[in-house]
Length: 216
Image (cartoon, rainbow, N blue to C red; front, side):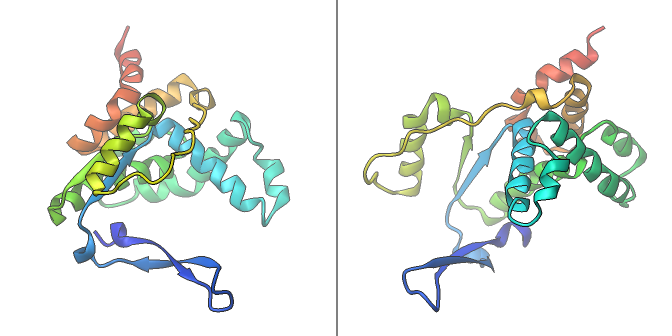
């Protein structure tokens, strides 16, 4: 629950009354009245995390960008380096038994996929503990049902539309950043580590890879 309470708050700068900066805060759970829970395809979500990391590092270390180019090769190298540092830590946890350790094998960017599953598991737990209404959105629905999803969200929040929404530009899909075997390993891992609610909302992105894995 404490992890879910962390966030960012916009505050006016002390030096410039028109400038807004963000600061890290921990919100009191009592002020939460409604929850909007968004699901993004995990395959694309982790690739987006790679792009975000490149964007952040571009301000600090240009040489890093050369080592991790903005393509499949750079992504795979990023994942491999991440696994070198995180796989042993996760597999040695007292909560992870030998059968779960086995499921981790072959998963690229293991820490990122673990955080993805853990975050959604906790989001459902927080919703249940707080006993507040929630609205669940699948990211891909914005590209096919933008108006319907927007209207439903505004209705859920009790808000009226002001002006016109900008055109929604769907981000690229990044399935080609992974090998077929990696996608199969990711699907097995997420199914094993997900709660029932998390798996119900993500399995349509991954079930094809599980079928391929069990087919002769």
